[in-house]
Amino acid sequence: MADEIKRLIRARARNRATFKRQGISRKKKLEDVWRRPRGLQSKQRRQYRAKGRHPKPGFGAPARVRGFHPSGYEEVRVCNVADLEGLDAATQAVRIGGTVGNRKREAIQVKSLEYGLKVLNPKEIVSPEAEVTDDE
Image 1 (cartoon, one colour):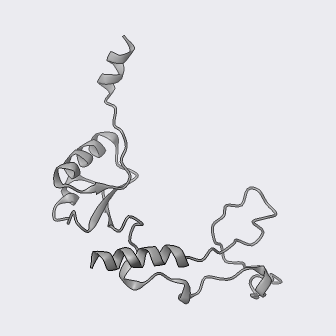
Image 2 (spheres, rainbow, N blue to C red; image 1 turned 45 degrees about the vertical axis):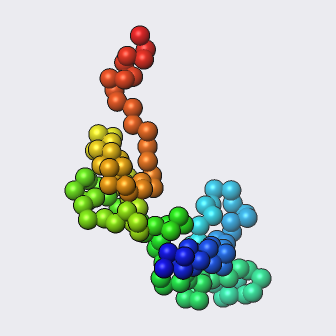
Image 3 (cartoon, rainbow, N blue to C red; image 1 turned 90 degrees about the vertical axis):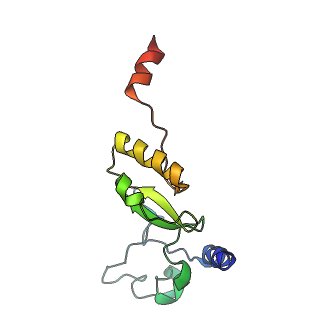
């Protein structure tokens, strides 16, 4: 089954379509993320072929790998050490929440290392005591 999932993830990456935001080439400040065109006279909204394609149901990923990380793991968001209980290291990987502070993040990273879980967004934690001793 793991080989099948890896094959589907590679196929998802190979067939992924890119959708251009309207006016992306005209304004430097616009981000390259899809936004639905809303102008009344917009050629892209009216789906003229030369103005770029729209996201539609046919462009989605295969249902078995939808939401999976490109590494092949299923992402699980974790905010504390108790959330690590019951996770499967073979199929799931941990993403630590953005609002988690350094102290709790360090505890989560150490515990996930014990459980054999992969952390998708690890940070190198430097304790304040270590910084003070380095200056002297």
